Image 1 (cartoon, rainbow, N blue to C red):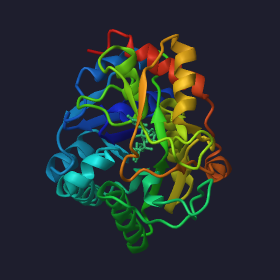
Image 2: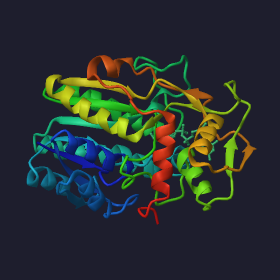
Image 3: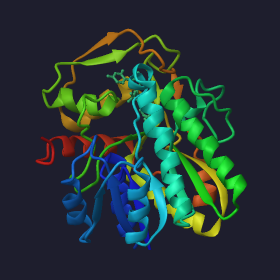
Amino acid sequence: MNILLTGGSGYIGSHVAVSLAEKGYGAVLLDNLTNSTADVVSKIEEITKQRLALVVADVRDTATVRAALRAHDVSAVIHLAGLKAVGDSIEKPIEYYANNVQGTISLLQAMQAESVKMLIFSGSATVYGLPQYLPLDEHHPTGATNPYGRSKLQVEEILRDLVRSDSNWRVASLRYFNPVGAHESMRIGEWPRSSPTNLLPIIMQVATGRLSELQVFGNDYETIDGTGVRDYIHVSDLAEGHVATLDYLHQNSGWHTFNLGTGKGYSVFEVLGAFERVSGRKIPYKVSQRRPGDVAACYANPAQALAKLNWQAQRDLVEMCSSAWGFAQSDCVK
Ligand code: WQD
């Protein structure tokens, strides 16, 4: 059974491809390579010992997506292609709506035309906006506060309408919290082509001397130590959550949402401390102003994923930091 991964050569996509292979699924990657490189294919093949097809294309090229669905006898799609930086989306909203919303519509048109009606969508906890209660469950009101989050919310609304219109569709939106870390082989991991905005990749840049210090965006939040609290989840746990969802969709039609988080929040200083203990490296930092759009705390109630998918995160913060550090020092990083 072949699964098409849009954005498949990216950070999340490459780890999902490995988890799919481990469970006997075939994966086909479709990626425009704006934030990844084709050499990740050989790394995934090294890990899985299986050949892997890469289609270099933009998901907005509907005809090419249709051809890929046909040529590889695809039975389901995991849609990871999209832009994901909050600050960037505020500066370039049209780019975000074009990539994230228009791209999804193009994919759905291709799937509809080829009668492929099983989809997992890469959602985000940003659709919850400012948390009204914590931990966040799937019933928490949605209300994004930036173009990136709104694009994710708009796609979820489109998917809901699609499922309402045709009961043959089986669709799940996986609302990611904060994916971090690298595969245990250290052959694949997170190393964005553009300058990173997320905490862990920036800590890696400081630890490897590419950046002089970390800016801590505010220490006056009402949290354990004043810094922002987030639900960091190991990317391999996240990847395994996608495979568990695929198994679930084979038994359950309709529309579903699942929070993929650990249920535990860590502050910036707690992450920093964990990384310093793991790496033996001191990370110089300076406390600066809060970053616009940041919330004080955001972490998941992952009970629904456990109850329905029989999935829960297995890896702890030490493993997240040590795998990220191992990958940052590997020869896979330029
Ligand atoms: C984490 C914490 C920052 C950088 C974003 C997206 C979200 C998801 C994950 C895709 C916050 C602090 C960060 C730095 C810092 N992406 N920080 N200095 O903002 O929770 O979520 O990435 O789905 O949609 O919004 O992640 O890693 O940017 O920040 O102090 O240089 O680290 O203030 O408290 P965030 P992040």
